Amino acid sequence: MSALNLEAATWRKSSYSGTGGDCVEVADDAPGVIPVRDSKDREGPCLIIGTRAWGAFIEFLRD
Image (cartoon, rainbow, N blue to C red):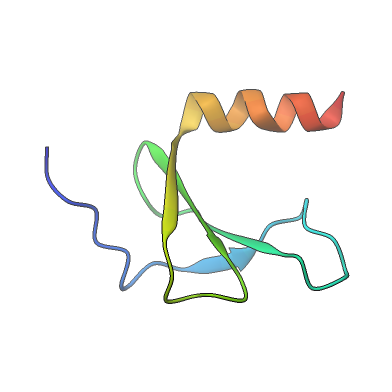
């Protein structure tokens, strides 16, 4: 498995983030996965979530 290079990723604030500064950013241009990071710590760690798991998470939030 090759490493995922996120240096050139296009990050955006998640539409599910709040307005109080507790925000997450997601990158949409990684095939098969959704990278997620803390908007206050852009150089910090990043979670890599499979698209199926991300979809289930979003459905949970909607419910």
